[in-house]
Image 1 (cartoon, helix red, strand yellow):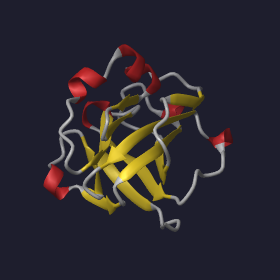
Image 2 (cartoon, one colour; image 1 turned 90 degrees about the vertical axis):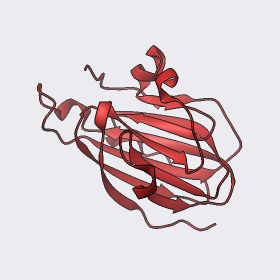
Image 3 (tube, rainbow, N blue to C red; image 1 turned 180 degrees about the vertical axis):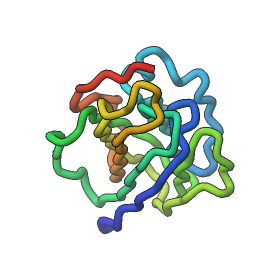
Length: 160
């Protein structure tokens, strides 16, 4: 697998979240958004990941696939989390939580175990009413054995 070009998306983060999931996954995020998951802006299931956001609006998201773990570049990010998930179908969908799955953007990935690094920037720029902001979300994926969820950089708290 070679590094692929980054996808740049605008996703409707209804309920302050969007998803990256195997297109065949049917996991219940209602139970995954525990107090701990809300605090770290990351809810993880076997084949799905929920990314928490600072706004309940359209948010910019960049997604890239790598052959190996990307280099650390945490300096410009407010928060960086990593988790594992499993691709079964060979296709991963990226969508807002109320988006229609058949219309979601997809990435072809060979079945197997992957790491996802979710990096969050501009969280403190969101206006008090949550309507405006320069928040940005980057998702980096690469093949890797399963490993626990971990926070690589903790920074700005997001209050909703």
